[in-house]
Length: 471
Ligand code: BES
Ligand code: MG
Ligand code: ZN
View 1 (tube, rainbow, N blue to C red):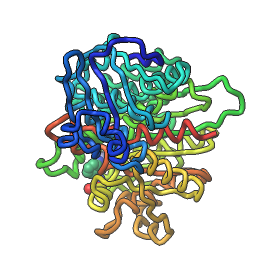
View 2: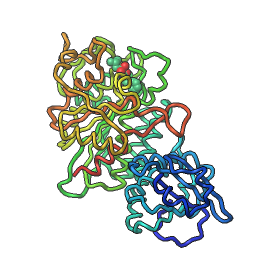
View 3: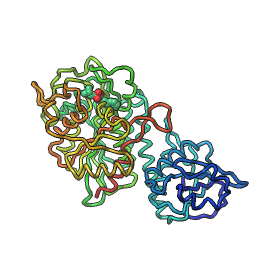
View 4: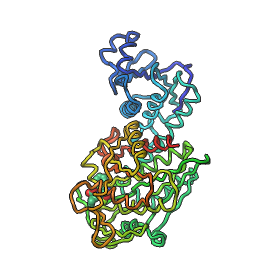
């Protein structure tokens, strides 16, 4: 796709964007019969053919339409019209959309080309597909196309890895992808295998990995800007490539969904790709504790007491509460070894958050008011919404153990996503600006490009928007 400022061709393809109000104002200048079919409502598409061109009338909805909704319209248009569209110079007409809205429309066109397995056969990926738009300077258009491309590279990578079946994303396969990614973007890449993790004392992470047929891969990726005095953000993504539950085995009914238990990691990978491609003026330290949660004779057992990286002991009462184990060590390793201005972990952590919020939002926990508000606002803006839940100390009582400092689950059937967050808080080593995002309900769900549940890309735009605006 190319964005071009000039209008100098005989177009055979035209996209005309209208809100309902704009359509009422402008429809007089079109064949009056069109109004029988098209009113400008959100997601409405009317195709009109003349002798020498095809015009797509695209409805954006009310004039109060938000930017993320314009992206939604473009995603849907891109998905549903794929077979009608052609890779030809295309005129985009709209007198009223702002630069930001235009940017969201372009992003949506590219994001809507995603399907699993991803290939770039969609007409929008062809170099012959040019969008001509006069109202924005070429310099600004170049910036918009760079952003849209970086975002779609990040988000499609996120979706692709989440959608892959478990046998195609074993820890070594994912590891070699990350190594190549690091090389491509000059990221510092470090990985600790089982032996190294033992030396370092990453016991909580290892407890989950010990039952795996695959070696440990506690992975650290670092993106550094050359800009001086830039902020540093620590990002952690739960990366359980498949969660069987371990010895506390899950029910078979929905177990296949557990290939999505790396949704925290894929969101982080997507935003790392964006930051690297855009060369954002920020430093990122990313930790992905990679493993599966397997059932095997070496697997950890309910009743095991293990020592985490920060020295705290944990009584394992349920091996299916493995996410909090691996995140515990990732959090304390990052907090102890790196100086960061902000520490965020994302995880498909609990069924409890799914039961509470469904696919409407992620559960947010933070020890800092400013960080909490920043994330809530960013979530609203990107429509990757979050809702804040408490971290009150009363919740700690339920994870007190008789034989260790903590137990990994509460034995009460209430508020597990809060309990899990409270557990994680014991491992942040007093970091003053920490947030935990439980995204179990929003990562994998109904999407426009697949019949069954699939990767939504949740978290990528939330994080990229946050990182881009965090100075
Ligand atoms: N990966 C799951 C959480 C999950 C559930 C993600 C549904 C996506 C959809 C996590 O490891 C898990 O198994 N959590 C248990 C914890 C329980 C044993 C305390 C859960 O929530 O049931
Ligand atoms: Mg589990
Ligand atoms: Zn899990």
